[in-house]
Amino acid sequence: CARRSGLGTRLPWDPEWIIESLSDSVIYMAYYTIVRSLKLHSIQPEQLTDAVFNYVFLGKGNPSSIAAKAGLEPSVLEQMHSEFSYFYPLDSRHSGRDLVPNHLAFMIFNHIAIFPEELWPRQIAVNGSVLMEGQKMSKSYGNIIPLREAIETFGVDSLRLAVLATAELLQDADFSATLAKSMQER
Image 1 (cartoon, helix red, strand yellow):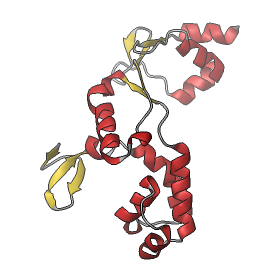
Image 2 (cartoon, helix red, strand yellow; image 1 turned 180 degrees about the horizontal axis):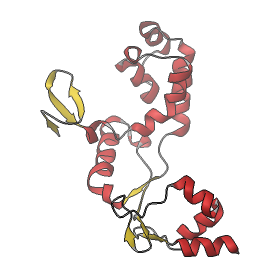
Image 3 (cartoon, one colour; image 1 turned 135 degrees about the vertical axis):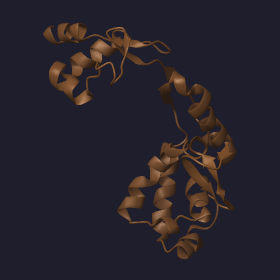
């Protein structure tokens, strides 16, 4: 999945080619486990070598020598590895059904290519979209209610109940302001 123009990451050994953005963006869940440490310790991109990632995500290598080469404290590497190990593997990835043939497929492919089996995602839950009074939500239709506005209007519990009342996996939930209002009044 490479091309010469568009969004994505330049191929390191041939910058004329761009890797499809889906190909390199589907293990962001692993990144979420370490982002706090990256920010807390002001770790720069050039410090994030292959050896650093191999230790943090795969436990490979000697943290002291890797840290020394990357200009990091060994305790920082160990902390990131510990955080990753605590949160991985992914227990459940919830996503819209429209992402099954692309994003979710690439997520599986990349996890299998990078991680050992014990770190592969445990489950993918697929859900439908949220409709508004039976219609697809769209800015062009003018039928979108921003989440903060909906919470202010109906309250968080009423909003949750109104969405859940019509929600089932693989099916579209059909939000109704009338239903949300009636939930609020109960």
